[in-house]
Every structure is written in C-alpha cells, then in structure tokens.
Amino acid sequence: MSRSFIWYFRRHPILYKIRFRLLSKRSCRDSIEDFSYNEMNKKTDIPKIYHELNSLIFKQLKSEITDLDKAKQIATWLRNNIKGGPGLGKSSATALRKMMNGEGGVCSDFSQVFNNFCVINDLKVKEWGLKIMSNDSAISGGHAFNEVYSKEFQKWVLIDVSKSILFYDVSPGIPLSVFEIVQRKNENHKISFSSFNDLITTENKRINDLYVTSDFSAFVITNYSNKVYDSYLDKLTFLPESIIHGLLFLIGKSYTFEFLKNKENKKESLDHLKKK
Image (cartoon, rainbow, N blue to C red):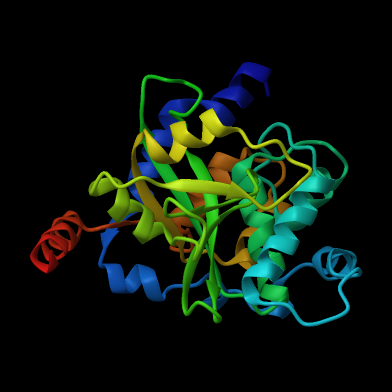
C-alpha cells in the first residue's frame, strides 16, 4: 500500500468532515448534563497499564482529597510525564504507552487517557470538543478537553488537561462548567483562567484564541465504549484508523458528537434576560 494512499485514509480533511457530520446530532441540555463517560465504562474495562500507573500518580498523597483536587492530580501527573507530539488515534492502552515513551499525544489523546484514570478513581467524567470556525489554521481544527463532576461544588467543572487550566469568573472562586462558559460568552461577560500546574507555562494567547475570542460550538462525546474501541483498534491494526471508525459507525457501535439544540441556546439567553 503506497504512502500517499495511507495518508489519504488517515489524514485527508474530507474524510474527517464526512465522519464529523455523520456522528453529530443535537440534544437537549438535560441529556448532555446527565451523561458521564462512566456509564459505559467500568473499572474492569480499563486496561491494566492504567491501574499500574495509577499508584504512581497518588503515591505522594497521604490523606483524602476532594474530587477536583483528585482530577488536578491526575492531569498534572499526565502533563508532567508526557511531552506530547503527533496525534495517535490508537487504543487506550497503546496510546498511553506511546505517550509515556515520548512518541506523541495531542489534546484528544490526553482527554482519552484522562477519562480512564477518572473511572479508576471514581470520578465522573466526560470528554468535550470544540468545533471552531476560524481562518487561523492554529485553532481551526478545534480542541479537546474534559469535565469532571465535583461532589464538593455539586456541579460539573471544565478541566483542560493538555493546557493544565481551569476557568473562572473574573476572580478565582468556584471553577466554571462548559455551559457556564458558553453562557458567559453569549452575554459578553469576562472569562478568566488559571493554571494548576507550576511546571507548565500557560499559553495565554492560545487559550484565549481557543476559548474566549473564537466562534466555537461545544459538543460532548457520548456512546464511547473504551472496551469496544480498544478491541477493534487492536485487532484491525492493518487498517487505517478512519476505516475502523467507519466500520464501527456502520455496525452501530460508534461514539456520537452531541451539540446543544439551538432553541435551547436561545431559551437560556431569554431566561437570563427575564431575571434581570
């Protein structure tokens, strides 16, 4: 198989656009709010390598910590031990192994492995993506991040693992969820962010371009069975990843990109104005 042929099926933007459209749907806010990655993925479904590394992440801790602190501990350890690189698109075990060996890892890879560590540590988690409309090639491909549920705050909190940041109102207090950030953007309120990792330099312009100034649509990734995807990605390594994803779509086992319905976006804005 020629290199150009392999590239076409792995990287050609037309295939990504087709897949994105096929996998996308509109959902109500309650459906998105209630969803968690943990629903389809149990501790026993998570590969052995995650359980082995998990003890290293928390070996310095000698007391119980909050859900959010636990999430930050996982995110910090991942970011400090993985230098990143090209996108992988492999099974979760292979992706983590390659990332630990310095062979790659982009934001979506960080989100993928973070999901599994959260499951092991009894943290409710979900993975989000941004669809960004921009002429700037640096951000037009979008971005991936996560949300974790904090029992202490009784709410979801956006956490960007690859950037090591949380979002707040103007002054740090209770961190924001995805829906809270979207609402503040719609109302032209200021949004601030803060790093929780002292070893990572905060990319202020990049983060502002992605989250604050860009025209984005946020979607949550649902119906993702780590066990199913790992099985197909490991067994069909002779096929390009895009073909494997297409096969899973055809047999009804693919994940879904769920966007908030437009009517609900408008309703939220109207409800807010009525309260003023």
